[in-house]
Length: 318
Image 1: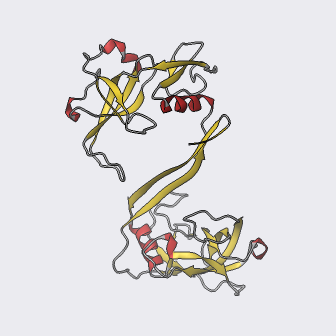
Image 2 (image 1 turned 180 degrees about the horizontal axis):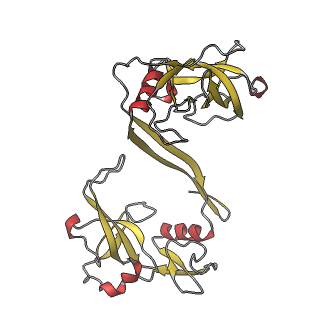
Image 3 (image 1 turned 135 degrees about the horizontal axis):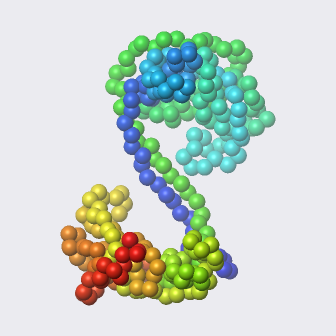
């Protein structure tokens, strides 16, 4: 973490791949994009929904009547994006737009390539710009671009063709980049970890010691200012056995991740258990932290060799 007087901050990234299978409607929609075809679905009331959905939002009836709509449309609303972020459709400033394709009753959210906000307006005519490489994803539409035609160029038409090699599943990477700034309580907690100490804060009303500290007691609603060093040893209260290897995590499976109530703490924190076969970890096991060289927090916890803690000593921390 970087530091300014009294303040810590650090860039953090939360990222994971979201994998899902597709039903017949979504499969056809994404496969159609790969083939430069824009598909919607017709509801019982005759409305054309683009992007298509599998169930009618008004009646909940299953939908399956696919239609093809033109790749031209009308901007219904927009917002200018002056500073595109990594992974967004365009690297230069662009407009986020809702585009209602000709013949459709709903709008599709995407990017509009325009020279500036003065060139964008509600009601402007646009058309799809297809990506050079298409794989069956919304990014197969590279963006929308201004279109000279002022009138709709067509209507929705029944789509009965069957695409070869349909897209049946997708992997959507989810990523959040942000700067984290801890408050007073967590700053002191992190500073303590840098010295290989675990420091919590005690509620002046109920006397519970929070680790990591939160700055206030969520039960009593009062500020916690009394600092208390806890541990370093603790007791395993509950645990789980992890059998799926995480990406970019150099830990062999299976391994155990546990709730550990450090001595003197009023609630348990998370930690990995090492130094013992996974099938020998148990509730009540007494453990101590193991620090890696230069580590800013314990790498894992290992057994101390003490007798197991009596259940009554930690049952309130489950």
